[in-house]
Amino acid sequence: MSAKFKNPRANHNFQGRTCSITGVGSYLPAEILTNADLEKLVDTSDEWITSRTGIKARRRAAKDEFTSDMAAHAARRAMKMAGITGEQIDLAIVATITPDMPFPATACLVQQKIGARRAAAFDLEAACSGFIYGLEVGQQFIMSRTYDTVLVIGAEKLSSIVDWSDRNTCVLFGDGAGAAILQSRENSHGLLTAVMGADGAKADLLSMPGGGSRCPATVNSVAAKLHYLRMDGKETFKSAVQAMLSAAQEALRRCEIDITKIKCVIPHQANRRIIDAVGERLGATPEQIFVNLDKYGNTSAASVAIALDEVVSSGKIQRGDLVLLVVFGAGLTWGAAVIEW
Ligand SMILES: CC(C)(COP(=O)(O)OP(=O)(O)OC[C@H]1O[C@@H](n2cnc3c(N)ncnc32)[C@H](O)[C@@H]1OP(=O)(O)O)[C@@H](O)C(=O)NCCC(=O)NCCS
Image (tube, rainbow, N blue to C red):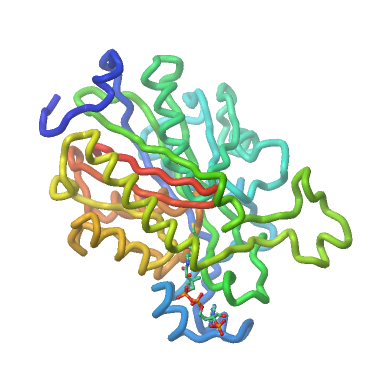
């Protein structure tokens, strides 16, 4: 294996079984909602949305299209790239804050849809950080030789929890799914390190108060709009920049590399100004940073999964290139991962 960077797992009696991403796939629902469409719904403008967020459009799932459907589409594409059937999947993890229903897990519904009959299945809830959390959880099973093939999906139908009369939030979010197949591959370090963090003291910054055990659905809770996403945008913005920057720096430090060694930075696609602030402080060039939020807005757990698929399919990275994923979300949660593609 190449030694152009340190494999941080070596500090922990690393036994030599690595975990690579052998397939990626994504799915975006067909309906496109442009800023002009939102101008008809709320008191906003294309100029305001574009200058404050960088978002020009987002996708919206059909009424009868659910998180598990989008997840299954993305999974099938990732399975095709990896050259595997559903039968080969040992574990399916779905990262989401918009499961089809509180239980059973959306991962079980996906498992059935893609014919992953042998697979264990569970959901993981780390909001927009869920895909990196999922990669790190999945990779533990590969490295420990518990499983050979793990499917990790980030999928969201955020349109189902957005208040379409609240201009502060409805312009920001979109629907979609992205998936990755994890396997050990010869001569590749794969997922080198993943930093994960959380700060529950800031849980109120971004939440959906209703629908859980604290506030089950009642006529009053629905009338009070407690089943919609709520956000303190300004404070979330500040925390996002700080958390993403320190997570990314920690991931690079563990690999003993600097940002110039990274071919592509894939940040969580929430706000163009957050991405620019993090990129600048990291010392990344605009060419290194991948952005697609103009097309899709913030798709939470699906965001970096969709972006990774687009980076791969557009040929921006080749096998052996280093990729830095960096995310932030409700919880608060954050994470960063360095991957040898
Ligand atoms: C939400 C966000 C775009 C707002 O941008 P901002 O520069 O902080 O804007 P402000 O909060 O200063 O709002 C300024 C004004 O714009 C108004 N405004 C909010 N949304 C608007 C919209 N869609 N169209 C027009 N005006 C809008 C506000 O009501 C406010 O008006 P007021 O001053 O009369 O009260 C920004 O804070 C943000 O992106 N935060 C992070 C959100 C995020 O990424 N969340 C997900 C994390 S995973």
